[in-house]
Length: 315
Image (cartoon, rainbow, N blue to C red; front, side, top):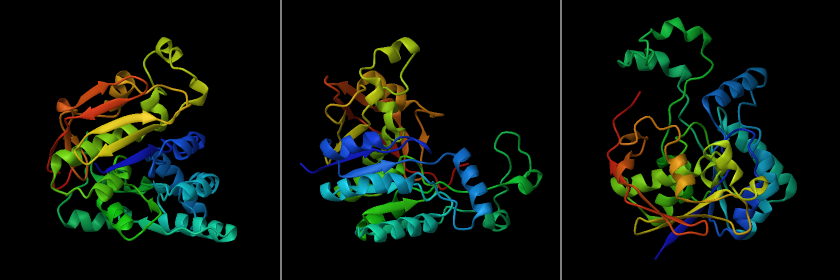
């Protein structure tokens, strides 16, 4: 049965890429999905770009690729990373120059279209008030202080980049889980209206998006942390997704940490407002039907995802 293995990359700007090496060397992954962005990060990147128009991308993407690309190319591993930040073209240019200097070959692609700061008037004219979600305050009360305005894109443009042969896909602000959902859809040829399978892929992305958190890096109380083996050498989680709609979570052999029912269920609810309606640009996930079966030895099987059509927009 056809399957694809995806390894977690970074979980935040400045995270460590060293555990990714083990996933590439002995984890059997085909893709690394690396999440470099948060809203605070975007504010930092905009400050960078105000000082230098060529900046505005996450500066940890280039050193990560310089350290890992020779090994990744040897094993046929592709990277999907949102390190493009507010300037994916700038990130692409910096990586292309560095690769040329080394004589390395790779097909780079960028995903753009998320930046809305220059389209606010257009959106308001079209009927979107862009008022504050909680207080209802008008946009004009804060517009002069805004550093960025970005929409969360989904997995579809990443899939198009992979279909065109990209080895490294650099995005701006996409939904975190889209970084993993895209290679799943691409490799397994899932359809954009197969809501249950898309929901499964979204779940995979959500469980991988925070680097070591799914392997015990953000687990329980201080006492629970103390029980995580070899905490100093945590492995990042890996998901093997099968065409039948099941997933096996594990990590590279010989790494620290733990992939278990408990570590994954804690990450599952991380940054989730409504577990019965986890909204993404691709699908709405109902976590209430998910089943996690702990098989032991850092192996957990995930099944039972339920999805519903994505809304026209959300705010």
